[in-house]
Image: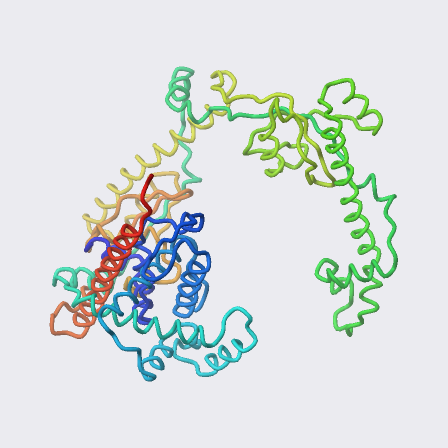
Length: 553
C-alpha cells in the first residue's frame, strides 16, 4: 500500500490533492470495484436483493445507476464515470447508505447540505471556489429538464452527505509512518537543478554488416513478425453513384433546403472580399452549383445502394447460387460485371475500395455457406462482395521477406549499438566530470569524439510538485535513482538518447514540527484512511452480492 501511495503521489501529485480538496471518494472506489456484473442481473428474471434494490429489476437498476451517475457528475463537474467504474461506485455508495441506516445516522441538516453543495466541483468558478451564479443557473436548468428534477438532485445530495459521514467514520485516523512522510516530502518538495544532454539518434549511423547467415538466424528467431495474416479472396459488383446522377432531378426548393440544413459544408467567407457585409442571398447564389451537385450525388448514392440491395434480394429470393447459369444470366440481364479484388486481410481492407475496414470486416463473414454480402456502402457508391476463397495465415519463406528481414535486422542492430554507445558516452562524461570539467565542457569533449550530434542544456531549479511545463516525463522518472553529482544512464526514446545530470539537490524541511511535514502527514493520512474505508465498503458489497446470489441448479 505504501509503495502505491508513493507512486501515485509521484506521478499524480497535484491531481490527488485536488481530489482531496473536493472531498470525493470516487477515485478510491474505482480501485476496489467488486467483480460482479450488473449486466448479468439485467438478464435475470428472478429477484435479487441488494441493500433494498432488486438487481433483477431494470427499474431498480436504472435508479441505482442513475443516482450514482448524478452523484459523480456533481462531485467532478463532468461525466466522469461510466461502465464498470460507474457500477462499482453505485454499489459502494448504496453500501455506505445502508451502513448509515444501521448506524442510525440522522438526516443531514440544512447547514450540512449547504456546506456540501459549496464543495461540489460542478458549482465551482474559474478560481475553484463556489460560484453562486453557477448554482443558480443549474437550479434554473432543472425546471425545464425532463430527465432530472430538483427533488431528485436534492435527494442525491442528501444521500451523498450521509455517505460521506459514513466514509469519515470508517476511515479511521489513517496511520502514516514518519519515513513515508519524509519520503514523500523528498519527492515533492526537493529543489532540483539539472542539466540534460541529448544524443540525436538520426545522426547515429554505424556500419551494420549483414551476412545471409545472420539474417537467416534473425528470421528464425523472429518468425512471428513475418507471419502472413489470414486473407480473403473476393470479387465485387460495384455500383458507382456517378452512374445514377442522370436519374436524379431536384427542385430549387430541394437545393435551398439542403443548403439550409448543411451550412457548414458550403462556406462562403473564402469567396468574399474582406470586410464584405453579410448577404444570405448572395452567399447562397455563390455556392448553389456545389450545393446542387452535392445533393444529386447524395441521392445518386441512395440509388446505387438500392441497386446493390436489389441484386442481393434477387439472389436470395430466387435462391440463385453465385457461379451458376442462373447467376450469370442475372448479371447479364442487369449489365453487371464482377471485378476480382486482390486478396486482403482483416487489418488492411481491399485497396480498390480505399482499404475500408468495414468492408473487410463484412468480407471475413463470408464463406462457402454464405457466398455473398449484403449491399455495402463503398467509396463513391455501393458494393456487393462475392466470396471466392478464404486464405489461412502462413509462415513465408525467407526468400519472400528477405528485404523486410534485412531492414528489420539493420534497425535492430542499430538500436542495440546505440544503447552500447550510450554506455560508453556516459562513462566518458563521468570521467570528464571527475577531472573537474563542467557538464557543458564534458559534453563538448564527448561530442568531439563522435559524429553523433549531442546538445546540452541546464534547467532552472524546480520541485516535482511544480515542474516546468516542458519537462520531459523521462527526466522526472530518472530522478528516483539519482543523487547530487550523478549522471543517469542514457534514456532511449524513439529519436534520441537522453542523459540527466544532477547539478544540485536541496532537501526540504524534515522537521516533524514544521508546517510542511504536518501538512504532508495530514494529506497522507486522509488518503490512507479513505483507501481503508473504500476497502471496507467493498467487503460489504461482496458480502451482500454473495448473500443474494441465486442458487445454482
